[in-house]
Image (cartoon, rainbow over all chains, first blue to last red):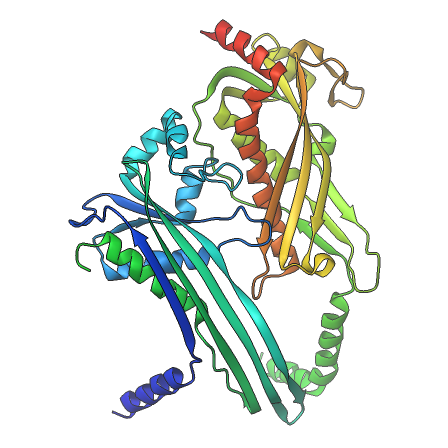
Length: 221
Length: 235
């Protein structure tokens, strides 16, 4: 009982200590698979051709996990495994930028065979990043023979902006775009012990985008 | 054993402060020392229909032991030594092995003579240039590695053994010569050291070199002409 109440208190404290996040989601999709995608599979890939940023691998993994946990019947292929198995065709330099480029890829016999093996139905490209927008305040920590402690206050803002483009692999056509923009401010007051109040900006973008994609792909949602 | 153990504990207790101070000092000073990266990575086999070619590959010693040294220009900077040679050889062995029916890595004159009649040509790669940037230099939160290769495709009969045992050829005697660039970047990440990030950027650059090579090899006019003739012979 004591353990349960302590856990509940910890969970409540964690929830209470999360910063606020605002999210905007846009969706434009066509030809939704109303019956679901059956035994076909989906791969979610990040765009990494821009000069100043890469879409984060862990963000792509987060969206894949979100879809899998929402509907376990959907097979989401692991991004890194897919890129390695398909090497070099999904390296940033030569990765297909338009759905029509799939035909060019399929001219390669081993690539076409591998796609057949994977039963790929949808290829979802995610382009975007999470950045720190501002930061201020000061926090000082010191360590001495008697102990350690921090004092001060710091705050910083984060913003995420991601767009998912859905390609139907069988029709070689783009069938939708979903975007999520989130922002939030995190705080770190410290009187001896720093208390981080983190705004889950990227996590919210992941769940927002993941929910929209799940609604598109799953027959259950 | 117990006595030794206690003595050891006493020593640690009596001396932990100077040792801790020393460790702190070493940690602080480590920022001023040189940084070294021996590039390592897992490279996938390319998913390509192999060309019906038996290709020899001769890695010049400067390629197989390639390293890049950048001397610190100020107190805030560190010396950097980036060793790419082993990773280059490992990567190109896998890459070329997937692109051609048979690949023979030529390391000696005897081997060359054994294979000379069977080889359609010999590829000789050279790293012409390597540059890197870290966030300290650019204020952009990205680590980058850029490389320029020079490839020469040579007839096996034009390769000779050098006095020091290495294989050599006259640079003007080649079927084709072309350059190829490769670029790799990786963003900064929490708890990722400069060395890890430069290694990762170098691995991405090597993979990019492979992607560039796979798509541009047949487009080099001299290579295309040689390839047409060689494939026709093979069929």
